[in-house]
Length: 125
Image (cartoon, rainbow, N blue to C red; front, side):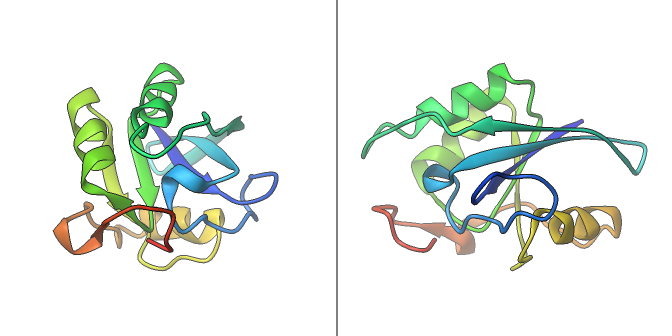
């Protein structure tokens, strides 16, 4: 399964998680199979404007992402991910991509729910 994680800076395992998927610098894409990390790639975030949240959703789907780990997003992009078959998980406050993947490997990550949805508009969620 390919897991996408919104990342700051150059991305990669040591990159900080971006607090909101739509405003990240890049996505770190990790091939995670049978409890092991494989290939790690970095993909630039697709540019989008207010109301254009489907651009990164569709770019991630095209890149083969099957799951996303995020600290926050609005209801519209969450519905978009669900519509294209990408499962969304809450980052649980993990500070880095590696820390988020550690939570995955320990089974300590949960599906994104209504409590994590925000109003968007560029805030921290």
